[in-house]
Length: 360
Image 1 (cartoon, helix red, strand yellow):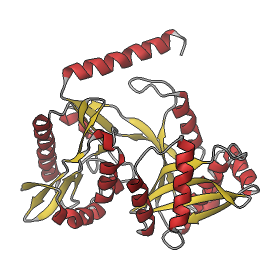
Image 2: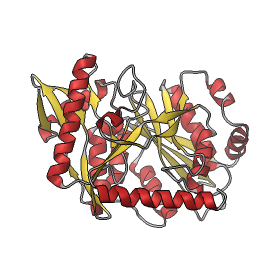
Image 3: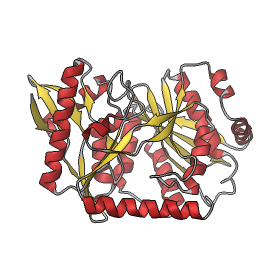
Image 4: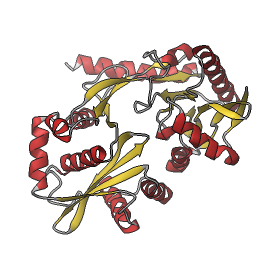
């Protein structure tokens, strides 16, 4: 077995492998790696992604990006969690364990080589199987990671659309019905998306964020994903003008709610546009025969070690409105710098203690 860097000549094989691996999802692909390498240029990102090959065939991949965030050298995705390694479905349990250890040894070696102080990884909820096949625990703890697992929401799409609607929270259904009388919603996929429509989404995103938060190249990539059937966009019109959009990744039967934007100057900002965009998207998912929808992370209160903000709690409540079930999301971070760990976790302890002292 050999460890090889992800290079130009291996990109096609890498992506083909991701399509077949039960552990991989879109964030393992070269498309997402390219996006992350362009997302925050101020982090000076560089690819350290590598694969394990046997007889010139890929048997495992490890997406890895080196960044410097607030002076901290780390393996992360735009400062956040990168995906866990993905393995061939043909490996035996023993072979997989061996290669898993080999991969994390390689991560440690690269961390030492580049002065990395921390690495963050999480298992993709939309991957076909759990991180270790039949086992359902956070296997990152076997490799020195601190368990920072949270929860996410998953919706089973393999049902009749009426059953899915019945699973929506009651106030969510009311908001959808009210918004449907106000807005005209359209789904844009590879068959009908245009550069003009996608540019309207971009401009709405910039306006909603109070300025452009990422380079033009990332928006161009997102347009390309739609044309490649790896994403779709839903827009809502009011009086002939688009006033809101939601963007979804769609890969290998799974869908992830990736982005939304609304015109902050529109009088319609609080008229249920987000609820309608979600519902129109879910109807499209069912029509296309997709399997699972992940609205996103779930936070219920300020708990340790993640002290969720009020905004995060409110967004979580909105996402739970689409129904489905709340599931664990395995993730972890490994520190190579004791001072950094002490500084960050001391701050978290003090913030949580302060929160408890004020009555929660």
